[in-house]
Amino acid sequence: MVKIENYIPEKHAGMLDVFLREVYPNPDYVMHSPRFLRWQYLENPFNETGEYTLKLVISGNEIIGQMGIIPVRVRLPDGGIVTGAYPVNLIVRKQAAPGFGALLMRDLLRTCDLVVNPGSSLAGLKICVGLGMRDAGFLHRYLRLVNPELAARLCSGDSLPPGLVFNADTDVGDATDSDRLPDRIPAAENIPFHAASIMRNRDYLLWRYQNHPAFDYRFLTAGAGSALLVYRLEAVLSHEVSVCRIVDYMGNLDALPGLINALTSSLNDQEIALVDFFSSVEIPQAVLENAGLVCETPDAENRFASLFQPLDFRKLAIRLLVGGKHADSCNLDVYVTKGDSDQDRPNSARLVENRA
Image (cartoon, rainbow, N blue to C red; front, side, top):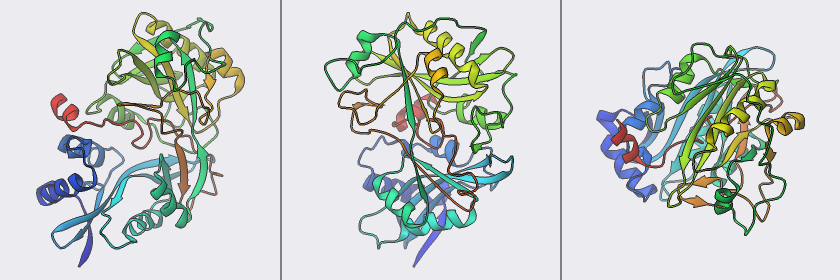
């Protein structure tokens, strides 16, 4: 008999460990961390169930499949608030009968108003499209050089890609940098585009960034909290260089250039190669020029790696899938950054447990 249950550590931890070791050969994979599971699937402020939102497909005494759900609230372009979710870590044993992955996704699409899936695998893409989810294209990746010599080490070719800006405007404006979420931040619905977006309220930002179990995020604010930029520094594995990853942005888009300039100015005396920022919504060219940002061509022969643990050039872009009964009402316009879903997550369970 096959059944679907929410993960309960006291009941399923042993079975889950066996399953994960089969489907993820790396024994240090982050889902082996109890602390990470608790943070991602239980402590999320949008999780109102009081249970882990990790679904397990169980046959007898074995787990044969799983899918994590990150519940959110979504504000639609017309101002309406609906339930939303990110599906993550959908995987089924090869020996299992086909259809369990589709069963888990179908149930989520039935119960949730808007399902947003960035970074789907090819197998996940086939399942999601087969269930009626729509392909909204790829996230744009915006880049700014900090140190050209260091950046060249992260390139697939022998030289830097053309068009990158190094000496951009250094007018930093009024910016404040902190490791704590400031008291004054943009309202949850204040995103820089007319698009659907998760409600980035204070509870969510505290959970997602300040209380993250592995990463140290920093908060850069403009003026009196009119804009908020969230970033972290990431050391490239086996290379003496780091990158700066902007994972979220809220507020007035006009404030972005000043915050980008303030950020890069603060990085000049560090071993930082470049700054990158992923956004599903295209940033206007005038703002890009003022911020010294260039949109990357993902399939270019000479490009920067987008994965750094280790350096990996194989992943070209982050695909975005959108489904649910409100997918049409938002016209597939959903504001997604690298901070959404699990696109910015640790790989190592030891990193999480040692930090705890």
